[in-house]
Structure formats: C-alpha cells, structure tokens
Image 1: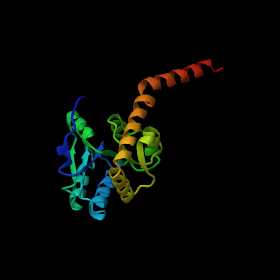
Image 2: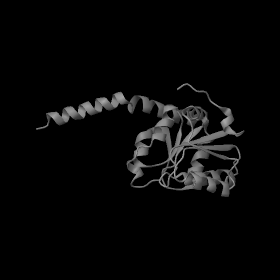
Image 3: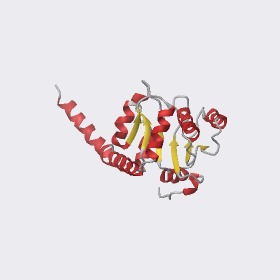
Image 4: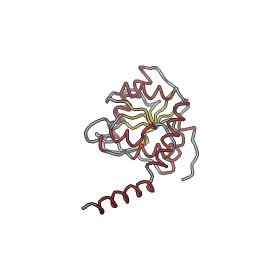
Length: 200
C-alpha cells in the first residue's frame, strides 16, 4: 500500500511513538501509558507524542487512565483505524513499541505488531519475551523486566539516538525480508519433511 508520512500525526511534537494492536488485559498497554507518564511528567519531556492505535476490551479503561494521568495532549488513542491511516502512521512514527509483558504465555507468541514495524523499517522498543527477541533479532531494544519506567527510559534513549534508530530499523527490515519471509519458511519446511520422510 502506497502512503505518505503525515507530520500532522505528531501533534506539533518532535517525536512520534507508535503502538498498534489489541488493547486487552494481556497486551500490556497500561505499561505504555504509564511509560508515557514517566516520559512526560517525570522526565519532563514535552516533545514526545504517542499514537496508540487499536481497540479491545480495555480501550475505554485505558482511555480513562490516560485522562486521569493528564496525558490528553501527549497520547492519542483513536481506536481501530483504517488500513490507510495505519499505513500513514507507520510511515510517520519514529519507533514502534511492543509492550506485551514477559510471561509464560507471551514468551511463546509471535506478535503481529513486531513484524509490521519491521515491514516499515521502524526500530522497536519491547519487553524481552523469548519469541519477541527471536522475531525482531537485532532490530529492537529489549527491556528485560516488566517496568513502565524502564520502558519509558528505553524509548527516550532511542528517540535521542537517530543513528541507532536508523540502524535498528534497517536491520529489522532486512531480517524480515531475508530471514523470516515465506520463501525461507518453505525451504525449512521442505527440509524438515525430507528429513522426516527419510527416517526409518
């Protein structure tokens, strides 16, 4: 899908941080909202805007949390968005966040959001789940404990290092297109089938 970067999504801020995905009680979006609070209020960074896209059973509660924390001017939560809007947003963000917390379930889940950030060559900040680290490889910064403050600090560190953002984004895109693509999967599946077929 062809789409353009849309500076207006930054709401006048220098940086734009994106999230795409479900907003349920297992997705950790509350960590990201609290990370935004840490960035804006504790670290006193007023130059960062957050665009959290998606819907789910916790969306209304998360919206209320944003408002209670006084983050209305720094966190946009439009709910489910069109493919065209999503494409423009992914072109526009400086980095994507995967805030699915580290636990036994998420350690075994491949998150679509991670692959979508990689498809748009965007660097990622994420909690260091086992499968998440395998998927993103060297294309992400990993926070190895479920901490909103450490997630926020990692986001700021990467926002303040544009060269590293470019490197991570490029690395992630190469990994997705050359190592995790369907053609590579077909080769591995055929090899596994051949091995199984030749076993006594």
